[in-house]
Length: 110
Length: 115
Image (cartoon, rainbow over all chains, first blue to last red):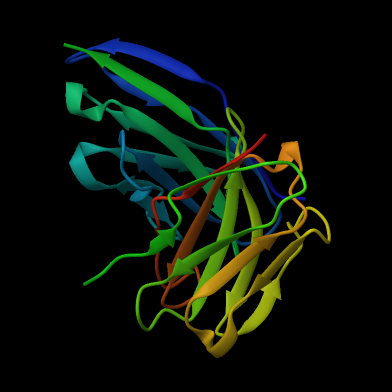
């Protein structure tokens, strides 16, 4: 069965700190990987996605993620966070449907 | 372009009652998904429609849940009778093609509270 796990449930950072959120998946075969974000009071929206090709994927708002097949990981990174990045982040993966992790709440302190 | 809309945004019902949630996908999106999030846990897949057909309903918890998508447009998810453990946020998402060709567009969710 496919599964996605996120290691950090709640992360608190100061503005300008670097961010890395962990995500591991378990699949056989073709895998599509995603990071979604939910800002307070808003709907889930896509940050970035990986289907194939370059394992380093760049998304919106300066986020990037690296697909490391040998580690079954797809960690999300941002070099310098802003207060506006305060949100909940969800890693997901799948082929016909997306299986999500439990989410990571990021709080950025000004 | 209008996004995915869900009704109601919040519903409070008593155990044993019936609730129907509605999702209007983005126009032209053949794929429609229902997800549920119980507080603090993962966003769990419930089912997937392609037009009016159920492509995958492996995530539906039990036969108290009934999803329909008549005519391949909007979808409803009925819970009858509701139990306490059904409380959570029900998300609907739509996509134009499959996952390889696009992304999921989510609605804001319908929060269900069963007392």
